[in-house]
Image (cartoon, rainbow, N blue to C red; front, side, top):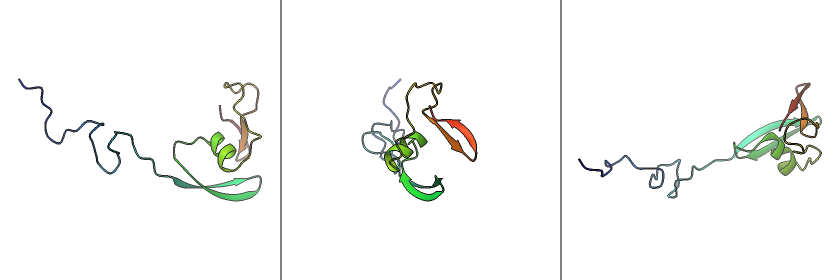
Length: 89
């Protein structure tokens, strides 16, 4: 029996399909996101893996929301989405 991989069965390190780089890391294309924050309509372009907490702080410079206790107990990471309190921790 041979342990040589079959042609075309490339692993992540050698796969060069459009969704992968030569190093095997997935490419993440930024996407536009429309938000209404404090009654202002905003459009930002972010990577899909960015959290809402990071988008508010890094893209919109709204630093009031924080990741403080990392459990959602202190309320620092709480925002209102459609009138409901949502913990972003």
